[in-house]
Length: 479
Ligand code: UDX
Ligand code: ADP
Image (tube, rainbow, N blue to C red; front, side, top):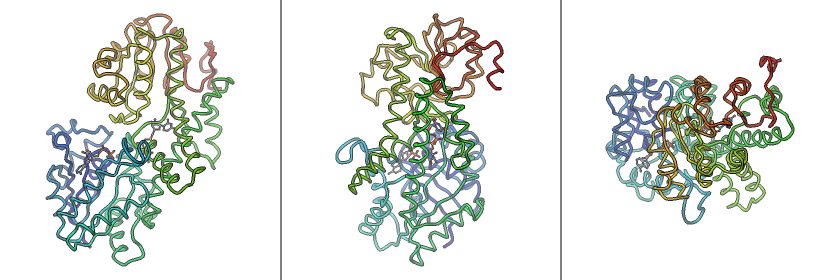
């Protein structure tokens, strides 16, 4: 089957960057990204390519190269479905907030709506690709909807999970460790559909990085990959607390571990807790699937990764309160970083939201600065938790566009995202404008502890011994 038109439903963090790269690499294929969110599509079409709705290093450049040539953003979902031979479904699948499976199962409402829409519009055979992370066996549900509401059109359903990480999406898409394509490989039609998708990726991904499996293996591999990655972060975060008690340094422990080739060095960076749209959601999904098969030990095992992560966020906030003489009431606390990691404007499940919420409960005045997150998003994240009224969130938290203003007259600074610019600030100036003692709580181990202590700060960094000494020669640390 020759692919001339690709449609992607969902112009978010996954659909946007993925389609931009496909369009860049396949100039002969027309790629149309559609979304029901008019504002989002308008932003993707903004004349100034720097105003596209998603911040990812390198993305604006790729969009500017392909947009209008063979990359299009539109709200006309039906027209794009009709023309395409291949449809990627890249809509959001958040954790259910109601009914059966509340707080655990993925909400497939949007996926189902897409399937129904495809079924009502399609006039010729289509390849449907699950791009969003979905619970295992969603493909079967999709098939049911498509075949039972359709008009004799044939569908092949493939699973092609996205492994890109935000902040490095373009890099990950251009040089993926692997591309996974799951399909109905027992039938000729299934094999042809798998081949058609692999042929798209083959334009820039080496053959030995393209893996084909059956649909279920593909769906489960995605959940498992995220669960394993999150588990590593929770494991090192569990150790960070022990390090603080014993005088060990979590970075040294991580380095020693990571040099074991069986373990490897990635995803061993201790932090204030993992965030993002995938880790928590996918593990909850796994827990839910395990429970639904009666596999309670399997469910408990994975759930512990989430429990550890919640604990890490909570203890970070508690430590601020305890250190500030057991009260933060009326005290200005500057929060540097709101995104769930650097180089993205995505804030979903960001640790910063939970830390700030906890501090607000203790009546702190929270002053937020993030280089890429907009003010409205910060308030919307706080309001979404529903801990207090919108008015109370507005009153007790301030969003700043200047980090020095955010830190002025603060009792403490909490570094919650590892934005590199934070390390380059004039920390002497920040210190001079703060109340004393001036505290820093570094949730990302970003700042140079010795430098900060020499300036006069009292600094507490994740996984570092609680009693830190100023060394006469800070290079002594390196030896
Ligand atoms: C993740 C997976 O990495 C990606 O393959 C999948 O497609 C989607 O989910 P993402 O959520 O974008 O990607 O970011 P990731 O880099 O995995 O980080 C997730 C969270 O873990 C972030 O909050 C990050 O700060 C934290 N983290 C990561 C750590 O605290 N320590 C680490 O060593 C690594
Ligand atoms: P992800 O990180 O998975 O890409 P996002 O929330 O960033 O998640 O993007 C998902 C996008 O899918 C949103 O912009 C949303 O408006 C869009 N979407 C959800 N349901 C539909 C639908 N039925 N038709 C078109 N777009 C949809």
